Image (cartoon, rainbow over all chains, first blue to last red; front, side, top):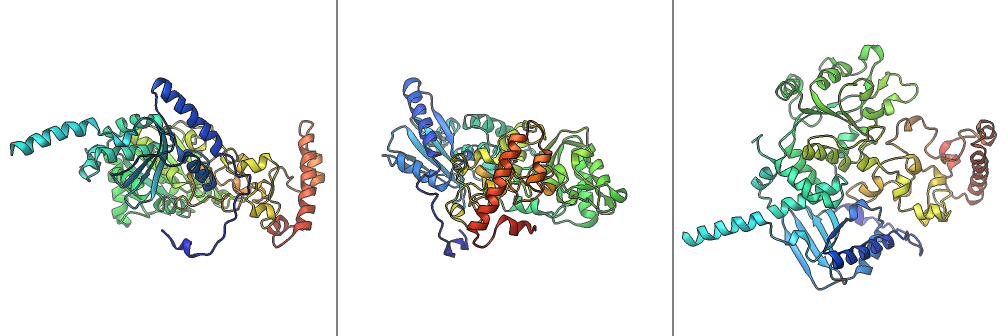
Length: 135
Length: 363
């Protein structure tokens, strides 16, 4: 990405205390999971709107772990969708065509929005397939 | 071409509906809107038409334009900038001289009452406004002329918003902000020296999406970006709560990333989105890189008494603080005096290379 990686800078950690900002978010996810289970209502959390250090992000991802599903969507740059070790908690990361992160969300849902096919595309598909069979 | 909506334009460029939804999610995030509003953003952007934008640069350093053109989500900002019709920006446009001025006049005539006016830089009033002129027209005259036909004005950067560095004491050019001159148009201030690029684009995207300016605070700043102070959103805030402070720029506390309040950080009195939006491709922001916030998005930050002076410290010294502290302020004054003494003695004891005193160059 840049020449910064070539500079030998050693960044000291934030100390064993950390900043504790991951913990409240994990509780928010817990509440969202309970809501999804009881009412079916999904929740989306925008990670870029939260004051997170890299330490916080690492701790959040470490706690959530890896689940069974991984998907990649190529639309206006790559997007990665990963289910965490807690089914129903998804990490959705959108990048631009230069592979730079645009936004990152935690989705608490049965299926992230980006994976469902838009209805308009389904309608277009029916027309397109019909035209292909007719031709 | 001009009549295409944003979604039609994206589709024409090969962006699928999934890609459009992703664009909307990123745009909503950029506008600091909650994710629940993403479908509304999508519905509005589906219908968004191409607005005309005229960008005027007055007494400024071009840092605001640099900030914007080096933003860290280039494709997203690029798509938004492709969709607006930037009809005049004398740094970025290819045309110059008469051709450039004609482009501005044409855009004004064609979109009278509908175009968005973006201004960076302050306006000099001294010497009849003759300190700064473009194409022989003083900044004051050009601002009044272009503002008259604008739907709304975005003052980008602390100079346009509050006067900025050109206004610093003794303000030799008589610099003032846009809102000191224009009183009859909706104005949104996007302060910062420079402003965060995603905040500039976020405001433009909001206008593009909803056809109006976002909700503003008492200083005409968009609440979504300036609603909370740096201190409240700072990842170092827990160190402040625990009373763990860096006393000099190279002591143990500084190395451990403790709170920079005592080194003059203006985070508690500065409202901006640096802590979450970050800078330089999302790499870092001033506090994360080890320097306190200088409060560059606040009015008068340039004459506020020193970047390295802690907010609770008196401007001169302890004696004067006690004299100037009113009845209600005595407790604060006393606490500040203790802090002042402690900071000075700690700095002497722990001195390694640089202290606040060195930086202030005071006796």
